[in-house]
Every structure is written in structure tokens, then in C-alpha cells.
Image (cartoon, rainbow, N blue to C red; front, side, top):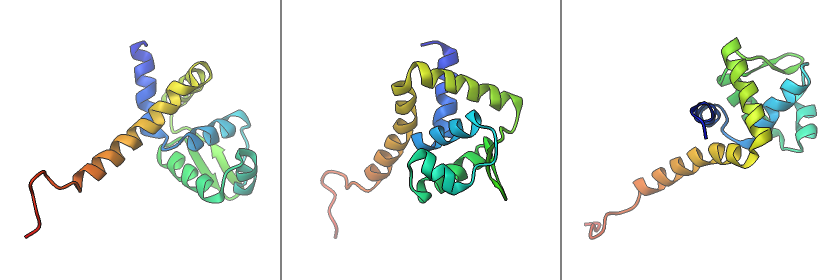
Length: 126
């Protein structure tokens, strides 16, 4: 894997909290228009909560905007738009790699959180 792919994977891990968010962004990018939330729910076959959370994350990452008419693909800069192009190419070529890069940080965070509550061996409540 090239260092360029590593950069893309880091962008993916930082920008997409779920595969749903990536799929939603690609739908917005593919058909550049205002998408009402209900239409995104139907198109992605997702719940309203999943779509709402994904949209919130995409807006926070500077990848989309939610306007009165609906959600639109709106990268914050041309550099971000170029990253999205590279993400889309990598996702087409190596979808499992992309999915793992999205899921892995969440898994590590959840594990670290759970580990914080483990009692040390030999430690007891007094």
C-alpha cells in the first residue's frame, strides 16, 4: 500500500464515523442536488436516525451542507474534494479495506473505553 493510500485511509478514519456516512456522501456526490432526508432514508434503506447522524458528521467534517431543501454535497475546499475523489476510487477498488479503516478506530476507542473500567489484578474494593 502506498503512502498516498495511507493518507486516504487516515482521511477516511477521521471523516466517516460509519460506512453509512460514506455511502450517504457518495450518494450526494453522485447526484448533486438537494436531497430531502426522507429520500436519503429511502435511497440508502437506512433509518432516519442513521441518516441524521451521518449528515451531522458530514457537515462537521466539511463535506456536506444541510439546507432548507435538503442535504447537498459541499466540500469545504478543493483539497477536501480531491480527497473525496481518492476515497471514492479506493472504495471502488478495495471496499473491505475502506470499511475496515472506518470500523477500526471505533473498535479501538470502544476497547480503550472498556479497558479503562477494568480492575487491576489484585485490586479490591475496601
